[in-house]
Image (cartoon, rainbow, N blue to C red; front, side):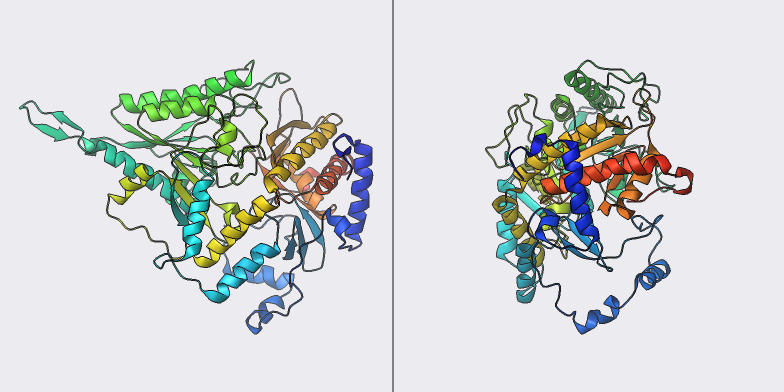
Length: 569
C-alpha cells in the first residue's frame, strides 16, 4: 500500500476488497490475499496416534458428540446459521475443515496472531523440557513477573499468576477484602464503662461496579457482573454488598453527548427513576457519571460500612465498547479512595496495547488533555494527570491462547493478604509452558510493534467506517480506540431504536457469504465489536469494511429477519 492509503476512496477500497475476496473464495493462500506473509508452521505434520480418531470425526459427528456430552450452557457461535468447525489459524485468518478461510475480526485472545511461529516454538520447546508448578523455582515465572510489573506504573510490583480473567478478578476481590480487613484492625469505639469494643463484625465491605460490566464466571465475579444479572434466572437481584452505578455511555446513556437524538433509551439505574440528560461536552458527562460513584461512597460510609473496591474495565467490551469519558476515572477513584477503597483496573479484554495509544486502557481513561503520543507502559510512562490503579488484572491475550492471566498489585496490599496466613497456590498457574508463551508474546508484541500497528490500523478502520456511515443511516455510532472498536447499528438516528435483528443478520451474512467473522455485544445486542488479532493489517481493514457495507446495502434489504433468530457469537 502507498502512503496515500488513508485517503483512498471507498470505490477503490471496494475494488481492492472485491479482488481480495475473490482470491479467498478461489482458495488462494498467497501472501497478497492476507496483506502480509503468512506464518509458517508445521500444519502438514501427521498427528500422533492418540489424535487420529479425533481428527477423523466429521462435522456432524463432532456436533452430535458435543450435544450428547457437553452442556447446552456452553454456547456455540453461529449456531443459528451453521456452527464453524475450525481446524487451522494463521495471523488474522481461521480455516475450517473444508479449507474455507475466514477473516477474523473478533479473537482478541490470539493477540499476536493465530499460530505465531515464535510463540509456537517457545511453547513446544518448553513442553519438551518441563511443565510443573510454581512451588519449584523456574526462571520463566520469575522473569515474566518482572517484565509484567515493568510495564505497569507506580509500585505495581507484586504478581500473582492465575489461569484466566475470571480467576484474576476473583483474586483481586480477595486482595481488596484482605486490605480492608487490615484497615479495620484496631478500629474500636468506647463502651459506656470506658472499655472499648471492636466493631469489625458490624461493618460490611461493599464493592462498586458498573452497569453492564462483566468480570468473570466465578461466584464472586458474577456478583459484580451486572451483564450476567439480566441473563437467565441464576442471579435474580443484586447482592446487598454490591452497588451498581450507571454505565458511562456517551451515545445512549443517561448523560449522552449525542446531539442528533431526540431521546435516549437509558440503562436501568440504582434508583430506577433517573431520566436521560444531554450534556454539552464529554467532560460534563464524565463528571455527571462520576457523581453516581461519589453518591454511593457517601451512602456506604454514612451507614457505617466501608468501600472495599471500585472494579472497572478500562474498556467495557460486552457493554458495547464503552470507554470512560474524560474526568470520570479521576473523580470516581478519588471518591473511592477517600472512602477507604481500592481501584481495581480490569485489563483482561483491553490490556497489552490493544487501544493503540496506550499500553493499558486505564491510561486511556486518564488521558484528559488530548495528547496523542503513544504510551508503551512502564514505571515512568504515566499519562499526565494519570491515576495508578491499586490492583490490575490481565488475562485473555497474555498467553496468546495459552491459559495465562495475572493479578498485579502493590507490596503494601500484597502484605495485607499475606498477613492472613493463607497460602495462595494454583496448580496450573504460572507453569513453565504458559510463562514461555507469555514471554514470547511480549517479545513479539514489541519486536513487531503491534501496539503501533493497532493505532495505525484502528485509525484507518474508523476512517473507513465513517465513510460508510455517511452513506448508511443505520450506522448510529462508531467508537473506541486502536483495535478495540464498536459500530452501533440503529433503525433511527434520532430515536436510537436499536437494530438488534439487523445486527444479527449482518453478522450471519458476513460469515456465510463474505467469510468474515464478527462479534455482537452491547445491552441491546446491536454493536459490532471489532477486536481482532493485533497483526490485523490495512488490507484486512479494507476487506472487512467493504464486505460490511455490501452486507448493509445488498443483503440487508432482502433479509427476512423474523426467520433468522439471534446470532450467538
